[in-house]
Each structure stands twice: as structure tokens, then as C-alpha cells.
Length: 376
Ligand SMILES: Nc1ncnc2c1ncn2[C@@H]1O[C@H](COP(=O)(O)OP(=O)(O)OP(=O)(O)O)[C@@H](O)[C@H]1O
Ligand SMILES: [Mg+2]
Image 1: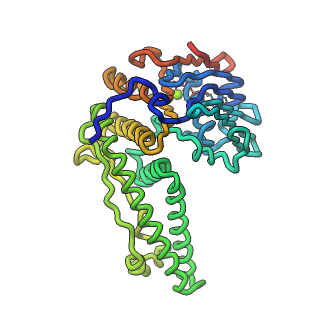
Image 2: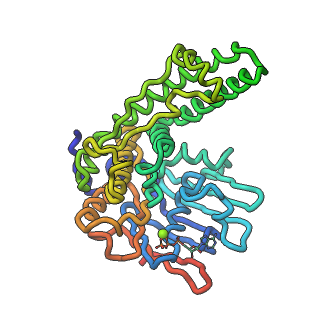
């Protein structure tokens, strides 16, 4: 286990080069009609009453840096009621180099994104440029949801830690899809069994790469995960991934059964990654609080790995995390967050954060439902 003290300075001083957002401009995004806000590096507290627009502000930073919302795939929900377009523009700095990001959402037309003035093919391409990690109460699904949620999560971590493998999970999924389509054609007598071997080969090869990638991800994440969880009070936290990719022979041996069902019945598209405390699987036996700590510890562990491996501090967005933690755990979390490049944390209460944040943003809502935010 690594013993690494929280750094007193922010990530920029450690040589890591994550994006530090210096200014956010919103037009007709959710409850914001017009916002022009300057942000400080380090730990930023976003505070204000329920319904004021705190989550909307964090969401705008996710959309602006990643090209999509962590809450919804329905982009039209992001456009302010009664308007037909929303715009998010961010100005920032990465290792001393200015960065400008812009995402616009138009009802009917869709989404456009640009980086330093150059239009991107798809807004989601921003993910390859900037790394943002988010915690919201919805993220508990990573621990308490079904295996699909954990697979998706660990595959995203794999892509962030090793960008050349960001497409691996989708490629493997496409191969399984093709094999399934071939199985159905064979079952319907529309093609011969000769259609299957190429897909068995692909599923086996890409499956082996994916299993290896997940294994590497789980073992890279585990020490930091155990440590961060431990200091937050969740003892002996670990990850369990004991999968093997199917060989071509194993896939062939399944042909009859797979033909009957029309699906591929073995392979990493069915795996799970166990999130553990000692021998306890937290999905089935963790309390809500323990599940929350596990998700938080995973996020902190990933942020540190990104710094170590890629020299990048991700932008951290933590929504509604403080209210559920006792004061000592809040202090530990705050110290960790102070040691990163930039982290925005929401809280309805201004005193929820132990110690001074680098900046406090106060959010409030006008009587007509429009949000305002400014440095407090
Ligand atoms: N597309 C939209 N257009 C206008 N207003 C919207 C839109 N989407 C959401 N809102 C409004 O935004 C407000 C909620 O903002 P938000 O979720 O950011 O609050 P919050 O400060 O995080 O509150 P809480 O402390 O309860 O989490 C609601 O009043 C909601 O009606
Ligand atoms: Mg909220």
C-alpha cells in the first residue's frame, strides 16, 4: 500500500497539468439565463438553498468539459424552459496554456462543441481532451446497481487511465452484437454455420483484451481505493475481478445453446467486479453510507492514479456529498480535495466544509426561477 500524505498545495504546483477552469459563461442553461462567473483553482464551495441551482452549475461544468450531462442523456432538458438554445463557454488553463471550450445545444439541431475555436466532430470528443470525475448521489449505482453499471464504470476508468483502450469495451460489445446477429441468422436458416467462426475469433480476442484491461484497472485502483476508503472509515476495502475471457474452443462448445437463445452466453459482457469490504460484497451487504464511502474512495483513488500515470489532475465535481458525512470525514475529504487541481463541492450549508475553501460561490434563485451565482 502506498502511504501518500495529502499535499498542502494544489495540483498545479505538483507538476500535474489538469484543466483549471478560470471562467464559466452560461446562456439559457437549465435555470441560468445568463451567468458569467470566475473560478479559483483548488477547493471551491458552491452553496445556496435547495433548488437554487447548485447542481445545475456543476452539471454545466460537466457538459462544458465532457460534452454530455452526467444526469440525463436528453440534452433538450438542459435548455432553459421556453428557450431554444443553451450555451456553455469555459475559459481555463492547462499547464500555463490557455484553453477555451464551448458547447452549444439547440433544440432540434443538436449539440456542437469546439476546443480553442476549432469545431469538434462530436461533443463527446471533449472526453479525450479533458478529464472530469463526478460524484452525485446517483453514482451510488456503481456499488449498489447491477453488474452492468459496474462494468460500464470500470470500462470508463480503463479508458481514462489508458486512452488508447477507451474504445475497447464498445469494440468488444460490437463483436458480441455481430456474433449474436450471426447466431440468429443461422438459427433462422438464413446463413450457414460458417458465419460463426470469424465472430468467435473476434469475441475471444477482444474479450481477452478487455478482461486484461479490467484486471489491470482493478489492480491499479485497489491500493488507493483501500487507502482512501480506510481513512474515511471503511476498513479493508478491495476489488474482486476473477474473470477469464472465453477461448474460441469454449465459444464453439456453446454453439448449440447460443443458437437456441440467440445470444452469446459466456464472455466479459457478463462479468462483474466486486466492490468489497473484507469478505463482504458491498452491493448486497453494504449500508447506504458504506456504499457512498466506497464510491467516493473510488473517485479519489482514480484521481490520484490519473495524476501518477498521466500527469493529469481531473476536474472534480462533487454534488451533495458533505451532508451525509460526519465532521471528521468531511475534514479528511476536504484535505484530499485541497490537494487536487480543482474541485467544486456543493452544500446547502455554508459551514459544511471544515477549513476555508479557496473560493465560495453563493447560488440563489430569483422569484421567477432564474438562478444567479457569484463569489461570496
Ligand atoms: N431546463 C430548465 N429550465 C429552467 N429551470 C430548470 C431547468 N431544469 C431545471 N430547472 C430548475 O432548476 C432548479 C433546480 O436546480 P438545482 O437542481 O441545481 O438545485 P440545487 O441548488 O442543486 O438544489 P438542492 O440543494 O435541492 O440539490 C429547479 O427549480 C428546476 O425547476
Ligand atoms: Mg442539488
